[in-house]
Length: 333
Image 1 (cartoon, rainbow, N blue to C red):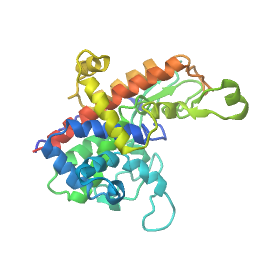
Image 2: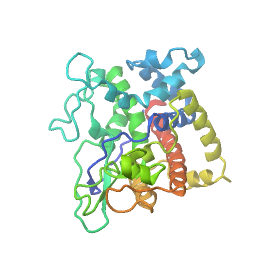
Image 3: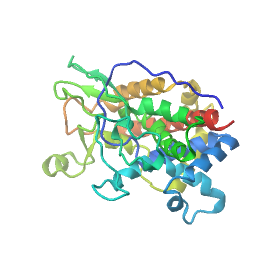
């Protein structure tokens, strides 16, 4: 097997967003796209590893035998977010919330599912920009980029057992999706946000009634959350599979708009390029009018939301295609 050998970037970055990128649907669509683009050998090896995930039985309950490997692979992309539901203080299955800047973030790695840390800091690496010359800040490490590299390389390590590789694969499926969500590669600094806006998590948008939003707090969401859900909210793995197949059919049509975008994208680019692309999209679209300076509330128009949906469709397809290339290299020999 060939190692990818990703080179890490030295770009100046900023603090991150607390939420996970994409909702469950977004992550499942990324994985479903990847599955359709993977070689039979890569699928077979990935399936061996996914079967070791403690959630495998739940994911495949009631699923026809012919679809079990595919559905489990799709669901595995959501597993790092499922850990948030298991955070507690006592008990052998409890997940420990080690927050964003742990002193020992490198501890307990590559021990498989015995790793009971929530590891929020693995989900992002936000490129910083300032709208008014407010100084930006460097990020901590590890982060999404370092972990994508480490987990990709780990899949071919002869000294690592399959349980650890299964753990790492589930994270890899998730993180490749994470960094293609524009607000997971971005933090806006300004006088209103001297510590950064946490990838849009500190900015409020209203949907759909401005007066109600301001007066009562109803219909309020974070800017980051708006983008997390831009691909839709259906939580069905089967629906995500269908959505992926539809998007791929369009992406492979050279005469479609999505097909043109995909054709112009370097699908073999390395993770620093993925982050930079998301960073550029965030500045152009996520922070576009009517998202103004300050915490808000902001009132995104239907045109803004439509653009967010188009960008989300584009990004999940590109993420899935890139993920497939990684897995074909690492698992397909």
